[in-house]
Length: 539
Image (cartoon, rainbow, N blue to C red):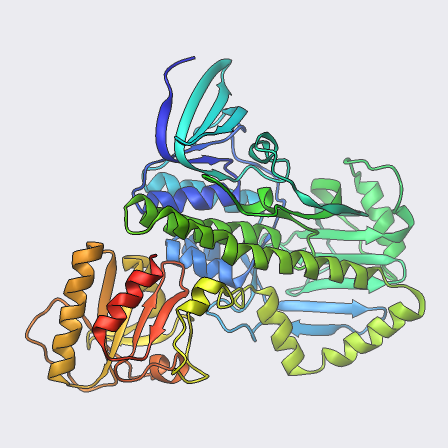
């Protein structure tokens, strides 16, 4: 064994969550190493749905265009509830620039993220099998086997992105609380010659459930449950004949499937670690939580977990915040993971209803889905854009009680609103976050010399403490704002998105985090008080 290799952050696993973390770390030019047991990226499609909130995170990372180019924007779902006439759930209700479910194989997701990482100068250390993980006061030590040789790494922090059977979790004796659900699903990536559909098609009846997800190349992901094959000994291998047989059983008018690219059976479970943090180790993605695939949530949760922890690691490692700041990762992400576990378990039980209960489910479901407000609630919930953090104790402590009810608050997601930037062209919020990370808007309404001077003083004091970490912008409703300096860029809120939709008024300061959530929204025009709130946020 050679000498110990040191790094600030060690990532174990290069699935979607690990690759997302690596990209976020590389973007910030942080010191990290990512270890992966596989010799090459997975060629299996596995998870296939990218939700709107994840696409927003990809935009903040700067990788969204490749996903949009290669994915299929599913506009909604047709739900066949016990009968022939489907109920349609439209996704244009989603309050995002991405009002759809982007359907793309996980193999493509991993490929895009790894290529982007390479373009930034990063890489994955493959064929590194974790042998032992040990946490000490000095850091986390990891022993791996690489081409028959043992190598040892030590890191200040470790991100366990090594999946449902996490070696990190096992070695650190971290419980994975929950249970197997006892259902067996079938899955196939196949051609369905007689189906030509832009919508996701879902069939649910007494005999089971089948869903068809269209890929961009014209093939389909078929996934479902055959009631007659529940409770049998588990097996992984699924033949095309078995898939066709299950479809013939469940569907009143079955489709012929052919040209299989991937076939498999899989079981489901719901489990979660009690704390997403153990000392210097953070559990991310499937290492932290697993659940059944209904609603296409799992991979998205992992990608969003990674985006949440990395920007926090940056401020701690650079000395802007203490180690305790990292506790907010568990406080923000664990409740969302738990909600998804509860939701997916509940949806599976609803699917399982039979007899009169199943008929009542079908009747009430069809009636409810005729209502626009029901469709909007379902679409926005499944898209993850309501995965917000305003209920954590830290974010509650940063709230300003004098704000209007409509004003955006700490922990809430900032939509990508339009701005009139620098008096030259329209721009929106997200490109600013992508470029600068922490974006601070100071609303001055119009020309106000004394307040402009205060804003400049605030910006200088922030820069003295945080060394260029936060980019401050002046925001005016219109006109032309003149300043003696040129350090602070001017944004004109001519669309009134910051004013009317975020509740900003003259004297307000809004600090946005690198993940697009609000750090705080302060109504006081006392910029010394606002500076104190910046310090409280990083405390």
